[in-house]
Length: 418
Image (tube, rainbow, N blue to C red; front, side, top):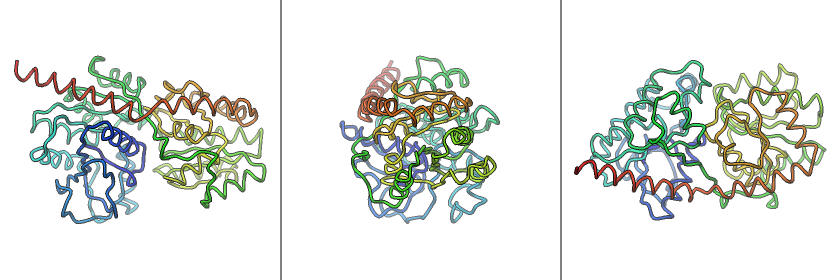
């Protein structure tokens, strides 16, 4: 299995998905060798339930540690340039540009395929498609590519990077099977990449209830205490969690916030995340005159993220184009109601949530106000929404993947010996 990031060295949902899926695969008896582009520093194994390899060495033992910044699996060429210019890609470890780094990973992934024992190749998103294709070329083993996000999602359909699009299309055409995280994404793959429908299988993401808290389990972390202070002083809290990029719609979130505050000034809006639009979003909050009502807390993970969910009265996913969206599931598990974009895959599987078009900030504001104002509505969305989320387990996703592994392996072998 080829990936690009893995917790705790992840900056997006791709790492979360890889962790949840590989852990569940291991639980049901599938042995996973997970390959990352480069060795990352960790005091303990990233995932003791799988075999972890690093493409810059090809082996898990006797490798020098390197302190590097994890690159999001959803990173764009613009974000990559932003990180390089900011000096956040240390020691010249990465390529001169993102495409070069992806190419290096492909070559090294093929080398690993020469020495590892495996039955099926599973590659996550375009950054690892080259490695998957090279491993297939060398080994002759079947390749499954897993689409968590497309170039059309990351750019909102504007300014498509043709090099990235070409890599995505080559990966999809060269794969034996394609997994998409939603029907929403499947439709994009068919429409924009010309892939036939019978080659694509939808496997929805899941959530891990055992790693999250609940509102009955109050925390003593500083961030929870700070937000509780607001609540004790009559403030309601609306939360956004995600990368501050065009795809995630934080700018629409702020436009809706402005309208909510005109109706109810006792609301605080929390933005958790970072990205190439961070400065723009901060400036926008000031330009709108709501800077004192918007709290930027940066990139948050683990217990502190659960505390954010627990402290919030509402979680909003305003994405412009969201292939799935794990964060609403995390919010629901933590007993926080959600308002989600209709342009999201997760809207296919959560029936107890309010939905809105990302661009309709008037309606977004109206629904935020409704949930904050009517306790009965908030309670119903919380209770039934949590039930929706609990059904979406990683083990269910893993079982679907193992069925695909067996079926694909069988078909490829049949063709070989015909």
